[in-house]
Amino acid sequence: MKGKRIDLSAWKRTPAHLRMGYTVLKNAGLKPPELQARGQIAEIRARLTHETDPDQKLAPTNKLNALMVTNSIRMERLSKP
Image 1 (tube, one colour):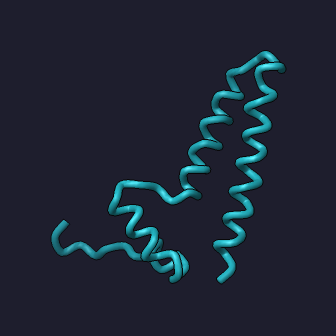
Image 2: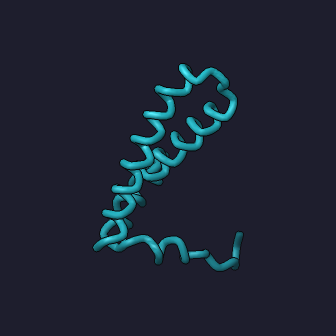
Image 3: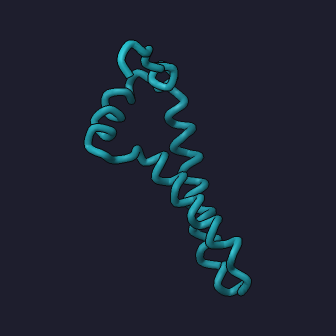
């Protein structure tokens, strides 16, 4: 909207060394890997809540655990300059 201030709080919280890359990804219509992983985690969790067969839960649970570990490591790396 015209005359309304732009909220730059998220931009300022983003580490300086990642801002340009995130801007390029955003302009290309892509999400950063961290957000893609969060989306996959949420999707797998939703599927697991509806699954009742323990044998059918095994593979998605393993994938969920791997994604969560990978995402945790990625987020830890991003928090350190």
